[in-house]
Image (tube, rainbow, N blue to C red; front, side, top):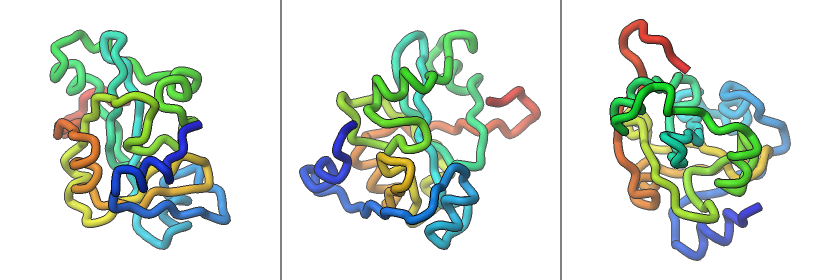
Length: 160
């Protein structure tokens, strides 16, 4: 597993790792653990788009519309797959549910959902199941050099 704390210090990232005393398997439990709203909990999902890993950062409560990812990358919807747990660990160095927005073994292409930028502070995976990362969305954008892309369906499209 990668050492997220060392990565943050090395790059001078403005963020805090919060060690929790309770498990946070859901967005609601994570929000409760840090005394915030579910809107401030974000997730980092690894998608394989035409076989290439792409990290998608989105609000924890919202579904990512794979059709929008497919359209952005100019591939068919069938070429956009959510990575399985083994692949997530292999590529990011972290287990599902603990993946931070950065600090992976190799730099990943990152897509950031614009609604995340509406918050002044968000909480993301902190590298382990009992740790959250407290950070501003602007800092995530700076560190990851993410592409901003609307990923939430506004109509009744099939979602994932």
